[in-house]
Image: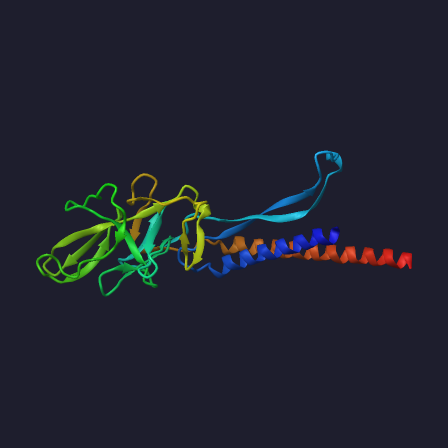
Length: 271
C-alpha cells in the first residue's frame, strides 16, 4: 500500500511542478493569471470503521484554481492599449468562428477596415451608443468599428478611449464622434472560465453567462488608456513553491525507496 500512496504523492508533485513551471513561463505574458494546485487527502474506511483506526492512503489533486488578482500596470503610450483598473474582462469575437473570448490583455490595434482587434483578428466588443453618447439600454455588444470617413466626408485621423470606455474617432475637419463604449464582462464564478490560450477564456456552465456593462459602472473597473496589465505571477513566490514541490517529490521518492528496502529485507528473511 505504501508504494501506491507514495506514487500518488509523486504524481501530485509532478502536477504542482507543471503548474508552477507554466506560471513562470508566463511571467511576462500580458494579462496572464497564475494558477495554484489544491490537494485533498484520501482515506480508506466505512461507516463501521473505528475512527481511531482510520488511516490515510495518500492525496489527490482536488482542483487547479486560477487567481484573477490584478497584475501590475505598465505604461505603453499607445492609445489603443487598455488596462482594466478593477474587475471585468474585455470581450472579443472571432470574425471567422463567431466565438466570444474574454481577456484581461488589452493589447489592441486598428485594422484596415476600421475594426479594433487583437493580434489574431478577434474584434473588441463595444456597447452601442445614441447621438448623445449614452449607452442604448439592453442593446447587445457589437464589433468596435471606426468609420474611416465621417458624415461630411472627412478622413479619419486617430482613435482614443476614455476612462469610461468611450471610443472617440477624430477626423481631418476637427470633428469627433463617439463610436461606442467598451463592453466589460463579469461572471458569477470567474474561476470556472475555460482557458483557451493566448490569455483568452471562454464561458462555461461553471462560470455562468457573461453580464455586460460599461467601465466605471457597478462592479466594473475603469479603463487606463495607454497601459497594459502585466502577469500577476510573483517570481519569488513561485520559486519558493518550486523548491517546496521539489522537496515534496524527493520525499515521496525516498518513501518508495525505503518501502522497497523493507520489502527486500522481508524477502531475504523468508528465503
